[in-house]
Length: 415
Length: 82
Image 1 (cartoon, one colour):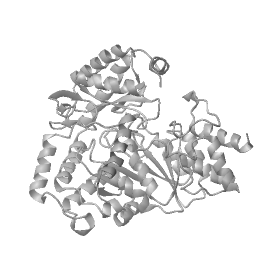
Image 2 (cartoon, each protein chain N blue to C red):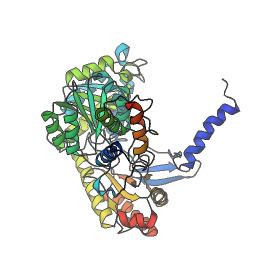
Image 3 (cartoon, rainbow over the protein chains, first blue to last red):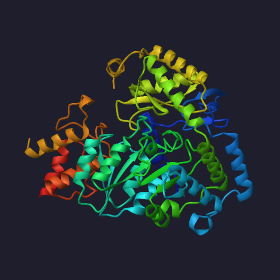
Image 4 (tube, rainbow over the protein chains, first blue to last red):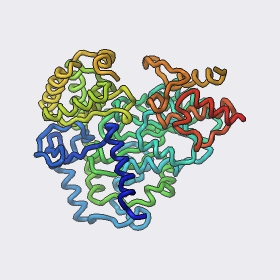
């Protein structure tokens, strides 16, 4: 089949359908290093605009940290640009081993295996360790990459209501006939910014003979008093069997992910996980930069402490300004607007005010739960946060939503 | 409506609707296309139907369309009950 006009039209029609549903993702170009203040070209072709970035996963502000950049340069100079191989053929350097060991120590786990991304770790881990006689019991709001990984494996799966421990118990009881049970959850849920009650999950896992896997991508490096993650926060460091996480967010922001946990489970991933077996090794410069990140955050909690203060301050200020927010004390603060068009319009107006935030709506979040997701960083200053809150107040006033609760906003704008 | 319709409706409400959702779910309410049930958590409904009615629903038939209302779910189950 040649790519003729008729064929082209098939795909063009699908793109049009995406646009008609209002789901088309526009191009935005960042013309500066990733940081709290960035230069953006948006829409495509427009003059660059300096904005404050409140939508990056740059939680610890390490994406452009001079020590991390220097370490990445050194990695590039000493170990080269790329490995031209998957890990198990000739793609594993001493620095890959060093990073794995450092991650194991930092997370308090027995063993760690690097993947090209956490998306890949989540895509590969289930198929590698579970069989058709096992069952996965997952929180309903887990990340899309976990959903994909679960669907790729032969084990049964079931879900429990978001954060509902009574419902999880019911599902664990229901699946006692399976060989093993694996509870799967995010540590911090990326859309709501809420923390799973991991102590309760682990207690249920013990009671019903289940293992626990946590995707801590939105927690590693800053949740918990020394930033180890949600398992540290809830004092269950030794109860979690597997953690998947990323180097693409708080831990430097470049790329790469890992599976960390019980020795046998990690070894099975090394032997069987397809994204590990069939994808290139993490580049030496990223490995070297990630090692530096772990060193920096192991020595001092200053950055996670700043982030904690920033998140708490923003949350207090935005609530005082009259907005509804969701979530726990995490750097993800969803400003709830419920109506999709309202969230989109307000995000656009915020950009005009020099604050870069994004509106999220169905199907990314449930219908009627549209919001602007604000993400704090240790790189933000108090002045940055004050400016963002002032812009929210101005835009919120324009749309008449200040002081309105869910019911009030829905009455005014609909679902 | 049959006893099965009542059982499935009760399960759907219990499994997918939170008390503060302020939603009225009937036999005709769109579950998946409306976002009440997402395609991932739909599996719980399949697990329930297979255990409750002792049937096996092939993935090719347990589609979002077939699971979209209590009525269509009951049609599918009835077909497999023979």
